[in-house]
Image (cartoon, rainbow, N blue to C red; front, side):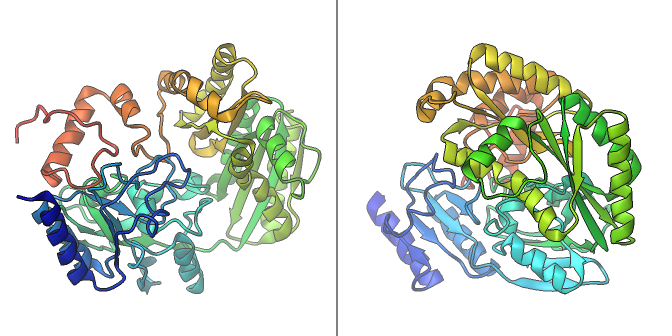
Length: 485
């Protein structure tokens, strides 16, 4: 068969299916979709297809299956591991789900909201708020990340400590399979013990097993009050001890516990000097705590002040301040949220998204710092993240005055090995919330057991036997699994 003619017939059929304006082919028109958010990966696509509903997604997949065209699904394109970027062949179809952007329904009595995959996360938060309820998933890219994307990567964010990852917030899914069939699993049930949990197969699969087109999302009662505090500490071990103290006193009310290194906050101060600070931030570590309270502002204030008072008596913290207004709380959170932006302005750096058990966090932080600085003298450790759920962004910035791109090119492999080996030695993971994508597929093969990889490949083969869904992402390409089909 003549390949150019076959491609032309496929594109003609795609145009006829989706209509004018919903299939784009010119490279200059789709450049924003063929490059990842970090600018690290750039591919070429056969076309960018934008179906308008689930039925059209299914028909596009059927068409791709008939022509042997691989599909790369994409939501808000905010991922950090290249999971939504096509390869360089120019033969993969980039399938955007952003037109599937409706809130289909809200069931306040059930505490459920049904949203399509292309809904922006912030839109879902606002729709829940209109019902007097809370959808607690919150992350830096919530103004552009989509529901399909955050579920496909099992995103985390700042409230995992209290509410869990995206998987914990999803009750059911609607999915288009590799055969172009639609599985309607949009359940609102908390209990449904009727076989394999198909929902959990697709969440975190990064579009390699099926295309999420809608989800039933769990809503919560909005807290009557929230209080935020910032504390300075001398050691990472003190931060762990403070977390244990706060968790014991505040229980489920503790909804945020963020750790930030001195280097992290110095970068923020350097690049965003206009941001307010409650006091001089000169300690090696800072912790940001958030309390959600079901009684009221005064009760929340008393509880958080009691925790910090106990911590001061035990000499766990050097200094602390409780925000007295929403503006002050926002200013404290702004320090945390501007760390990645400050790093981007400082230059290229080596990023890590690791998790370790909280009980081993201090040992990991101190031991890994020693190993990295022995190998890379002068490197700056930009360590911050969600200590409350064991997740740190353990980033390594080039020494002052050094070229970031050169530092990245020469030292990334060595640095990855040091940090990821240290996480594994602490029974941790090399990817806590960003996923695997194409950036970390070699790490998956290095750190996952052969049995786990065989099981994953068996699932992939069963659900996508032709390998057309997001090829080259998440799972290292290998021969067929040892398990019989």
